[in-house]
Image (cartoon, rainbow, N blue to C red; front, top):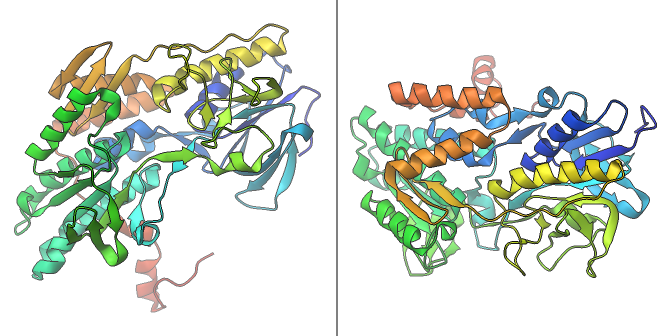
Length: 448
C-alpha cells in the first residue's frame, strides 16, 4: 500500500481493547505529520467482552457492546481484514482484506495486539455442536437460541424433545463461562413466566469444570460462594469433571453422566492468536509474544527487537509486582498496558526513554446474574448486590467512548423499569427465508 507521506507508519494489528485504546491515545498525542497509523482488524469494530453476558441476557443493546473503529479512530487508516503473516526483519505484513486480493503492507513500527481465540480440545462433537462466547454475534445467537428453545418446548408435547431443548450445557468455569451461564439462566427463568406449559423448573442449566473450583481469580472463598449461589438456583455445577463427548448433542461426562442437550457453550479457556505463529518474532512456550516490561518485544535473551511492541492477551508481559509471573489476560491490565504502550512509543519517537509497565493487581469482580455477584478487591470481599453493583460500575468506567457509556447506562435504566424483552430474533440467521417462501424457491440457496 503506497505511503501518503514520509512520516513513519505505525501498524496496529488488532482492533480489540488494546489496539483501539493505544490508537486513540496516539491520535490524541501525535503532532500533525509526526506519524501515520494503520489499524487492521477483521470485524471493523472493537468488542467490549465483559459486557457480552449482559448483551446475551438482554440487559443492554448489543450495539453498545461494540465500538466502530472508523468512527472512533478518525485520523487513522482502518483496514477491515486480517494480517496473515508478518516479516518484521523486512518490515512488512501480509494483509488479507475482507474484499479483494492480499497485499503486502510496509511499516516502520509494529504494534501487535491481536488478542486471543478460544482454546478448543479434540473432544468428539465439540467442533460440530458447540459455540463459543467471545463475540457479540455469539452472544446474540445464544440469547435467541435460548428463547427459541423455550418457544419450541412450549409448542411440543414430546417430553424427550422438550428436555433436550431446555437443557443448556456450559463447559468452563472461568469468567466468560460463569457470567454467560448466570445471565442466561436468569433471563430464561424470568422468561418462563410468559409461558403456559414451560415452568422455571423445566429449564436445566449444567456447568462442567475440570478444576475443583470456579472463578479462581476471585479466590477460593468467593469461588465456593459462587458455587453455592449457582446451586441454590438449581444450576448443576459439576467440578473435577470433563466433557468426554457431545456427538449429536448427547453429552457424556467423565463422571458417567449422559444426557441430551441442544445447546453446548464452550468457554474452556483461550489461547494466543494464531497470527503470532506466522511471524518471525520470538514466542514463549505458550505461543505468546515475548515482551519486556516496557512492552517492547524481546528475544529469548531479553534483547529488544527494534520497532516491535505488544500488549494484551496474546503477549507475555512480565508482572513487576510478582517476580517471575506474567500479567493476567484481563481488562484491568489491558487498559493500562494500552496507555503505557502509547506513551512509550511516543517517547521513543521523540528521543525519550520508555518506562516499564507496573500495576499491582487490584482484585476481581464477577456477575452472577441480575443483582448477584462476587468480588474481591484490595482484600475486601463482597457478595450479592454490592459485588454486582461494583462489577457494573467498574466496567461502565472502562468501556471506551462516551456514547457507549451512555448507551449502556440507558439500557440498564430501561431494564430496571421494565422487564427484559423475551423475543427471539433467530430469523436474523436466515434473513432470506421469508422471501424465499414467498418466491417459491429452495430454502437456504446460496446468496451473493
